[in-house]
Image (tube, rainbow over all chains, first blue to last red; front, top):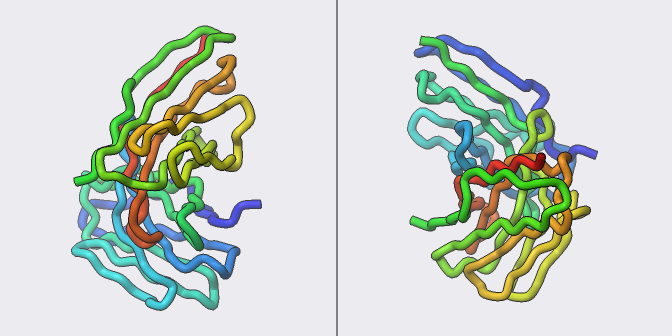
Length: 110
Length: 113
């Protein structure tokens, strides 16, 4: 049973526009949520996280929103750049162990 | 910056071979993890370790074992490699709370022929 779901395998946006990546989870015990970015042939790199006591966290062009009642989080990238093209993984934690979604491949077109 | 180093970027092994994937981290992290990444399946946890000589099974441990004799080193062992173990293998470590996330190595692309 998938505890963390990323229902969109891929997303394509134009450079300069907003990218919105979505993630749903089922376990109400999760207390931290993270986004990772992965380029081909490289390991994932940590992007941004949010604690369950918050509903928004910003870091430059990246903002994560958490809706606990809906068990939903989203990552907004504004403005999107071609270098943002990568696979984005949503992850959740209720302990030291992270549970990952299957990823969304973002393509930002020039 | 934490560094997680995986010894090989690319490996090609034959079916039935015993395969060792090595991972070393340089920040004295207690927790280390092995994942495999496959298209459409995301990151799946194979094994993890909270301390030296300790190991816990992840979601897909079958066909794998691990060794953690020193804090900085976590090895993944494929006892008898099979073609369905062709994958990208990723090692990670963490020493902070869950909000700090993991630091991943660059990955090992293993092909079993």
